[in-house]
Amino acid sequence: MGSKTDKALRDAREYIHAAAIGVDRKRKKALLGKPTTPVQVKPDTDVAGLLDSYREASFQARALGNCAAIFDAMLRDKGRPTIFLGLAGSLIAAGMRQVLTDLIEQNMVDVVVSTGAIISQDLYQARGGRHYHGSVDADDKELRDLYIDRLYDTFIDEEKYWKTDLAVSQFADSLSGKTLSSRAFLALLAEKARMDPGSILGACARRGVPLFVPALNDSSIGIGLTEHYHRMKKLGRQPMTISSIRDNYELTQIVVQSPATAALYISGGVPKNYINDSIVMSYIFGIDTGGHRYAIQVTTDAPHWGGLGGSTLSEATSWGKVSKKASHEMAFVETSVALPLLYGYALQKNAARGRKRLRFEWKDDELRKVSRV
Image (cartoon, rainbow, N blue to C red; front, top):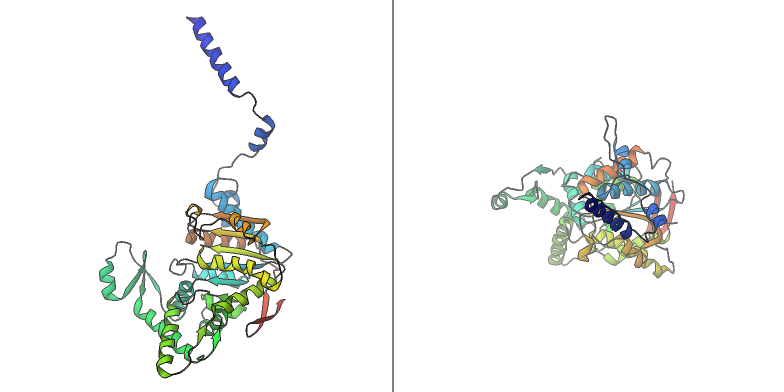
C-alpha cells in the first residue's frame, strides 16, 4: 500500500517537473521582477500620495496613477510643450466647474477645446443659474410640465436656460454680419463672465487662454445663435456666423508654433478628435510635428466598439497624432471621479511651479506670435 502511494507521489512530482521543462527561466524572472504593492491609506495620506501608491497596484488604479505621473511630467518638461485640454461630457452638472477653472488659473493647460454643452452650462451658471440635486427616479413627465430638465441625478431650470439662450442671441446682434471662429466669438462672449471666479469662460478671458468649441451649434449657445440667425433673416440683415473651418485654421497655427504638444483628454468626443486632427493638419503648413509628446485620457468609453471616444492613444500613434516615443496612458474611470484626483495630484506636487504662461497675439484669424510671460 505504501509503495503505491510513494509511486503516485513520485509520478505527480515527475509530471509537474516534466511540464516545466523548457521554460525560459531568465525571461520568466524578468517578467516576475516587480511585485505589486497593496495600496495603504493612512491618516496623513494626501491625493498625491494616494495616486503615487496607485502606480504600484493594478487595474485602473495603476492606470490613473500613471496618468497622474505623465501629467506631472508634461508640466515640468523644460521644452515647455503646449498643453491642450479636451473636455466632453456633462462636467459642469457633475460639479467639475471649479476644478476646470482652477486648471486654467493654475497654468496647467494652455488651450481648451470643449463641447458646446459644457460651455453653455458654464455660461448658464455665470448668469446665476444653478444645477440642483435631483433623482434618477424622478417622474420625467412631471418635470416636463414644470420645465425642469434632468441630467441623470441633477436638475436644471429650463426657463433660466431660455434666458441664457436669448442673452446669447442678443449679444450676437452686436456682431451681425461678421464671420468668426468659435475662439474669437467666445473670447468676446467671455467678457460677460470675467467677474465669475468659478467660470471657465471667465478664466480663459482673464488668462488669455484660447477656447475652441468646434461643434458650438450642438449646444444651448448654438440654439441662441440660431434664434439670432432667424431674426436677422426676417429683418433682412446679415447674421453673425461661426466658421468651423476657421477653427481648424486657428488651432493648427497654435500647433505648428509650439515646440511640442501634449494632450489631456477628459472623456472623448469631438474635442479629442479635433485636437488630434490639428496635429495631422500641420502638414498644410509644411510641418510634421511628430505627434503629441505626452497624452493622457480618462474615459468610460470602451475601445472595442471602434468608436472615437474609447479609441486608444496607441491607435492614435498609427495616425501620427501621438508620437511613437510619447508617454501616454488611458484610465477607464468616470471623469467626475478622476479629474479632481489628477488636478489635486499636480497641485500638491507643485508641478506647474515656474511654468511660464503663454500669450497668444491674434490678428483676425492669424496667430502672429506666441510668447512666454
